[in-house]
Image (cartoon, rainbow, N blue to C red; front, side, top):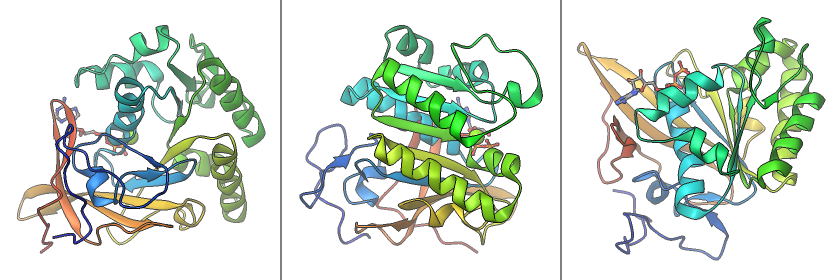
Length: 263
Ligand SMILES: Nc1ncnc2c1ncn2[C@@H]1O[C@H](COP(=O)(O)OP(=O)(O)OP(=O)(O)O)[C@@H](O)[C@H]1O
Ligand SMILES: [Mg+2]
């Protein structure tokens, strides 16, 4: 068991930070406990994992909870899935993103449609061809519109493929990650991985972010199990173990007092 999991004070299953730093609660059941009280404010985190692991759900839950539970407006940059698909997918968890957009608490930037050359009806649309400066300008516009303090870029991998040159991927993603922090956003960038031994796709994303959370959808004996690991968290203690999690009808639920044994 993680020695530093703070006492549960009985408020919606969340724990509080054990130090003086300003923590941003994700409100994702079990997660704030395994990272010693939530993310550090104004920092960018990588959430990586294989396809279907639950990266998008995890990250949207962070944004949704931020608005609904903590009054922190959010913005989402959708580089891979169409915003409308994201809205429909997470509606199954009872999360009504459209209502939050209508209330002026959430902005979604469509950075997927122009990439594949189809028109978009969205309010915020990124331009083509891809250019990091333009994307950052869109982020600033969207942030001003809703006053966002939380952000999600889903996914960094799609951006990496736009940039192509490996050396530039690191520089451009560092630019994005640092800009989000300067803008006063606590952010998640998602990242697709292909094999279980890697924590990022291009081998650089975890170096340009302040922390890395790995979601793993692992197959053994014809059964798939889900595990989460806080792989890195600069400036913070955290659980060093892999913990099981489920995707339920209410979203992601992590079991901080259970461990996963890979075989
Ligand atoms: N309503 C639901 N109830 C339970 N599980 C669900 C529900 N909706 C989706 N899931 C699970 O979530 C998975 C998809 O999660 P998500 O889209 O967050 O994955 P991802 O890691 O972002 O994948 P990708 O890399 O393909 O984008 C589905 O494959 C399914 O197992
Ligand atoms: Mg996804």
